[in-house]
Image (tube, rainbow, N blue to C red):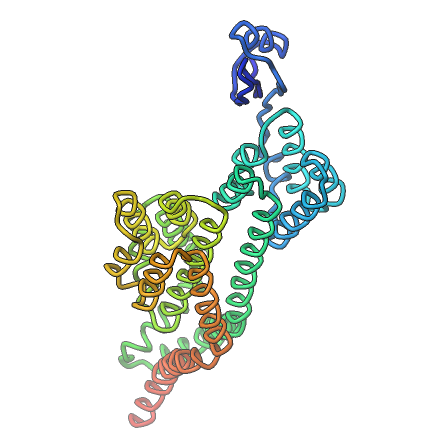
Length: 402
């Protein structure tokens, strides 16, 4: 038996999707019609081999999603029907995964599904924010405006991530160079010095013994050492992905680290304000908007704070009075939100908060190299000092013995 995915509508015109096991497509159609449902589409779900999954696995750059939202908004605003607009975008899209996704979106829309309902079928491509802003635009009859706002939101997020990545290039290059120089010395110079120290005899300082131990671990047991390191990395990544409290612990540590903690807070506040403002501006109600923002927030400390706020807001309290409880939000944020709630211009105030923190993030990323230089110099100093003490110390001792 095979699994078939179907789209149907009932006597009232309500469109639903699902999956069923059957011998053939015809049997599925008969079964659905017996239940009083009219089939719109029936497709066999084929399991992909591992090779096929790897072959089809491609990422969709955020820039492509921005372009998709912008162009779809332009076409809809020009009066082009959604299914036709999707067909035009499908023809000009070069990213294979996005092209295939748009093809399925077009088929779903032609079959009677709304665009937002179809988007929910591709959670790895379209975030909850993307889906819900589209849904709000459909309900309010302002889909083109909602998509334009969405494109602006995605573009700002993309710009933010690009700035942070760009600022991290210099520290990453320095770190790689340091590690590379250390490994080179451990593999070439230290083994020769170890032989010399062994021939001369005498008790070596603990720093020199540790240096020789590390060198031998890399030269004699290199494969085993790298296997252990790879295993540690694997366990860390596995725990980070599957254990909530471990991930929460790591996220708390990140928020307390110098420079990066401040940057992480400002990035999350900017995203929180911008996303919440965009959702509220699109017509999504406050509790639902907060829940969507929480779902799309990666840092668990911020996510928990937003989730708790969403629960309390649903019981009749305001956003501002709840955010005051959480120290991760500076006093400025709840104060400005309180003004927005009182004046009925919360979405506008939130966008101003987002703009303010975007500038703050921009200032930090522009000065990130300067801020990290002292930390880099300290690390380099410790590594160089360790090497000098480990190598020069025994030589100096042996010189005094002669």
